[in-house]
Length: 103
Image (cartoon, rainbow, N blue to C red; front, top):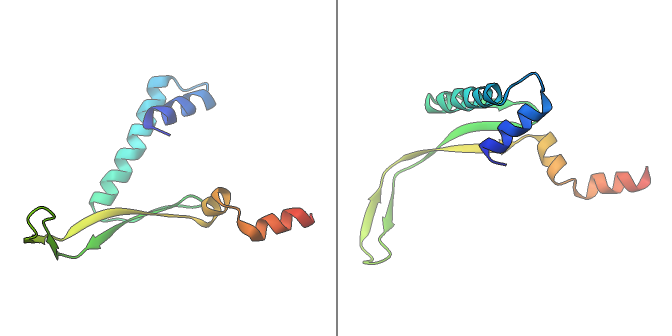
């Protein structure tokens, strides 16, 4: 699902929202999330998952073409961890499939 798909879905579900309002709402939420991550904050959406910033330490890598050692600096990268409800919705697994058979 792309950003424009999300805007279209929001506009379709809520008839009182114009397409422009839905677009503004999606932009506002995503900007707020991005801003929080840039500041180093954790974002938790219950039932969906959490966004955090992981630190990758500096390391020595190799240039594949020349084979020479290259110093790779420290990085901060966004990380998403799905919540339990989302994990179970995506992959019900054998436990819930077994429960569905017995019910």
